[in-house]
Length: 191
Length: 191
Image (cartoon, rainbow over all chains, first blue to last red; front, side, top):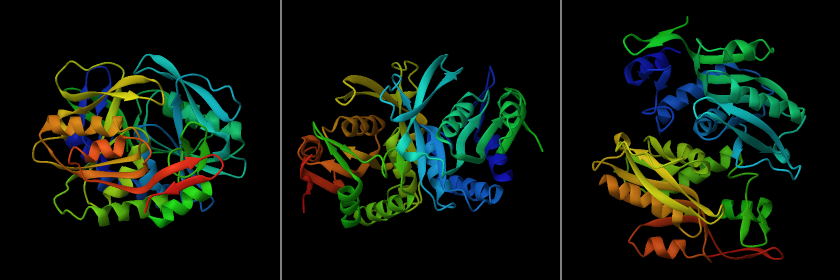
């Protein structure tokens, strides 16, 4: 998506250790006009009329998912990061390892909001090692719902997540795939 | 807002201890059509053309803020819950006490995204004891930005937050104010 790549080149900041800061437009300050273009592009990439729900994970996926949902006329469900495993049996739960924060955490979705009648589009801002996305896939599979695909804003193509998730037969569409990045030369996009 | 009150009556669940669950449409599964009506109503209540940024707090404020921002043609900034106090001086920071989770946490906003040129509308899903809203007000004041007001979806009018924030001269608009609620009789709204 040219508009997004241009924006990453202009306002993204590459830091040492494979870190890309896009907090001025994507995940701390949010450019809602850009979000709308992202939403339209996800609709184009996932034309499946049967998609009836968008699943994302807090916090930075929520805004993108909400704006995108307007193009699908469907509700959003977001997976919540939980302090502890919920043992009341009313939630689907999975554990996600965060390399950024060097810890693992549980995420939950109430069983009331996912069922085997649902056809789910998963939306998230980043795909790197794939842990968050695999966690969401695990939750959807626990519910018996179908997975229409996963729409990602920025994929770090030099990490293994994209390949791992696609190898499981999931239809992944990333609006920008970064094959290489460095503090000196910025981002190189896959085309 | 009649549509919202009707929805709370229909799908909200009152639990013991002053707890109102609205997770089927407002803060876990998100009804984006309702969010759009909420956004339009905030625009009607805050017609100030000078509002140039919406501030909210993760996680459940983000979706409402993003949809609302479309009616203000402005970006959203969300305050992040931080594990520890950031001491690099690049963020505005405040401490918020959470009665729900019985602990306090720090929230931060990068100094790059709030300045004394900004005229901020604060958006959040709930106003109860007011701690989160007072924290956001504290952050905006640290930045020197103006506060156009605070738009709240549901205010628990039987808790002290609304009175406290209004007594500081902040223009608060809540789309539904609950004066009383019980497991037996549900919600009584202020009119």
